[in-house]
Amino acid sequence: MTLTCDELKELWSKSDEYFQFSFYEYKSFGSRLKKIRELNNLTQRDVALSLYNARKSLQLPISTTDSLIKMFGKWECNTTDFSTVFSMDNLRILKRLFNVDYDFLFCECDTPHRYSADISKETGLSIKSVEKLSAMNKEYDGVNTSGDACYSYALLSSLDALISDDDLLCYLSYFLTNLFYEEDSDDEEFNTISILKPANGSVDEDSILDGESIILDVQKQLSVFTTTIATKLCKLRESINISTSDIPVIKKSPLGQDMMCDSFGNRLRFFRRIKGLTQSDIADLLADYRKQHNIPTSDKKSILRTYQNWERKNDSVKEVRISLQDLKMLQSCLNCSFDYLLGDTNEINSLPSPIHVLGLSEDTYVKLSKYTKSMFIFDESVPAYASRIIAALDLIISDNDLLSNLTYFLSDLPFYTRLNFCSVLKPISFELNSPADLAYDGELFNDKEMRNVFLPEICNRLLSLRKKNHNNMLV
Image (cartoon, rainbow, N blue to C red; front, side, top):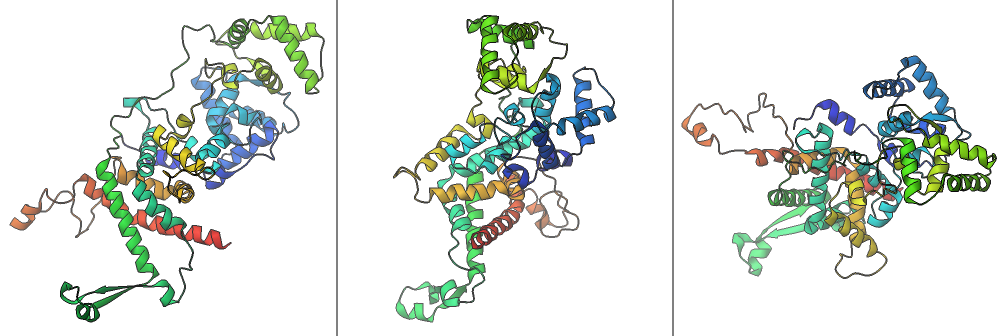
């Protein structure tokens, strides 16, 4: 699968601020919509154009881009209440455009995905890490898998492989988090290691005293660490097979064609009947909700007529318009998900699997959960430095360049070598000028060996992360 520069740019365009931002101060649809747009580096015109293109592809009535800009501007000005009426189709488009949950748009949670806080608590990973992994495309459908989904699969699989290697995690966690001394210290006695090479390889005292001494300062010690980590990464790569040529199909099933829930009205009717409720019962629930939330109430007949009108909206093609307030009221009274009401799923209370949300394997999820619990309840099977492992993983996930190079190193994602005038590495197309050159042909740098070109960058990024963490601890 070939990835274009645009696909990679799109995948990594979101900044750290986006993933770590908390929306607890944004309690209106409009203010939240404006902030998520700004965090995605989009203008109102960008969003309007996306709305235009999405509505066109769905064969919905479309307006001019300028009119859509005005409409979106009005949405962002809606900072007081949820009484504004919206097209359900527009809400679906906004959800997909910003890759957020309806609960976020309707201010039911303060993270872009509803279950991020719960997953963070369960795995120990920061909400920033959870949100970042959640934002990746996990719609793998085999042969037709898109470029960014293919890349996400390789990256998440690489993280799985990394987390499965306890020995490697030990070195990575110590390297990134054990920062008890100043790296720029001039105290050689404190910060250096002396290695003696006995003369002639002998173990007698004279040979040891006459041997050569190697002094390793902090920088050389870090080189030893990065070399060791690189060696262990090579060993890990040899033990796994992350192939993007045969990605397992885990795409969510489309809405069942055999269910009578293809429209908003049919969904309401289907839900009400399986719960054994009458339209009058629903009207009572809606009336009670209005009283409890200080929403101006109408008489029951009026509420009943409104609900009956909703159930009549059984044309799956015609647009349905409803206020956010009414959607929140229906979701609460019926105890169902917004995804069900808006037609994104046929499951009335769809609880996404934390494993699917993160995209990591079940083994990884169980391991992280076990590590997190060990911080509160002693578990002799868990390393005493489990908390440092999780902290190191947060650091690794925060670094896009490191993740990218790790992914290319551990998986079979394609990359393209430009030799130019390189006279050292000749992995392809040898110029055979002598019998010696001919003898080398086909012997040097197979595909996996050539992937070692990513190791220097991986080591540089690890050093950069270590320094960043060290500086953060000094602040």
